[in-house]
Length: 172
Image (tube, rainbow, N blue to C red; front, side, top):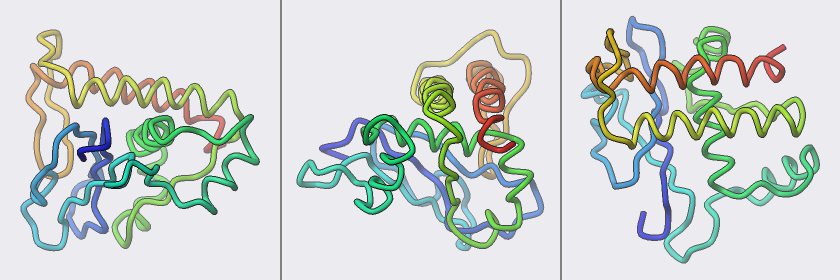
């Protein structure tokens, strides 16, 4: 994390009874119980950069995405895109069985415009996870096996709605 601005946090699998919602964004290292205390659902952090400062992105995957977009996306844009995808209720419902069996698979964007819309929504999700409390919320949001208290959930609820709109072209 010393060379990264942000890390995506998710789990390898979940065998719980609730709908899958195991994702987050952090600026500091987290405990493996960040999303769940169950041993089968340990949190894994995926920082934007490796300890030597190199982007923490598979080169083959990056080349594949660069061929779909105008240019290779920077690590922060990819992380924000992933946050958007993981926050989308449609994505989580559609791939629930796969999310319970292994790490999330992030679909490539339908277009450059869809990618940029998702990155914007992902930035909102990042802010909701990393910013201070929001007093405007009225209901908690479930993240992993935890409830995000209402006073912190307003921005996250709005960001999840934005992710659903932004990801629609990719999931169509």
